[in-house]
Image (tube, rainbow, N blue to C red; front, top):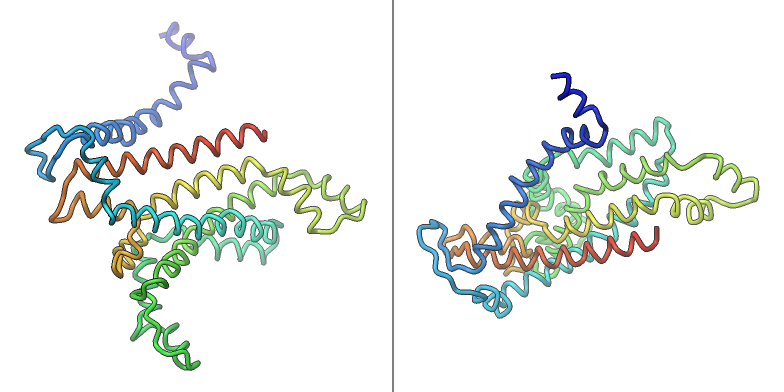
Length: 294
C-alpha cells in the first residue's frame, strides 16, 4: 500500500487519475462512435443493421451527387455565416459593456444567460408560439402596424434568418459570460495607465481589452464554428428543415436519412464523415492561426 501511494504521489502520475474518467467517456461516446461511422460509411446498411454489403466509396460518390445533401451544406454555411459573427463579435461588445461588477450588469448577465439553461425543445416551442401566423403576439403587433400577416416559420428566404436569430438568442449568453470572465482578469492598472494618457473607452477596448483576451476570442470562435456547423436541435423543433428544405442543415439531413422510412445507416455515416472532415479542417486551420499569433 505504501509503495502504491508513493508511486501515485508524483504529480505527473497523479494527473492521469484525474483525467482518466474524461478519457474513458471521450473514448466511449466520441472515439468509438466515430470509428463505427467511418466503418459503416463503406457499407450499404439498413436501419435494422441485419445486413451489410460492402460498396467501397459508393456512399461518398452518391453524397456528392445528392442535390439535397449539397443544399444542406449550403444552408449550414449560410447559418454559420449568420450566427458566428454575432456570437463572436457581438458577444464581445456586450461583454465589455457589462463586465464591471455592479447590480445593473449582474442583472443583464442573468438575462443574457437565462436562455442557455433552457432546453432547445422549450425554446423552439416558445418561439413557434410567439411567431405563429395566427396566434403569435409578434405577428399580431406587426399586423396592427399594417405590415400584414407574416408567416415567419413557413416563408422561404425568411425562415432561415428566423431560425438563426432563435439559435443566436439561445446561446448568446454563454459567449458573453465567457468574455466577461476573461475581461475581468485583465489588470486594472492597464486601464488606469491608459486613462492617465488620455485614452478613451474605445481605444482602451481596442488596445488593451482585445489583445488581452485573444486566447478567449479564438476559443469562442472555434467552438461557435463547430457548434454552428452541427446545428440540429433548434431546426428540428421549429421547422424540421422546411419549408421545401430551405432550413435543412447537414445534421438534419443526416438524421432524416438515418432514421426515416428511407433510411440508410451507411449513407448517413458517409455524410457524417464528410461533415467531420470539414469541421476538422476548419478547426485545425484556426488552431494553427491561433498558435501563430500567440
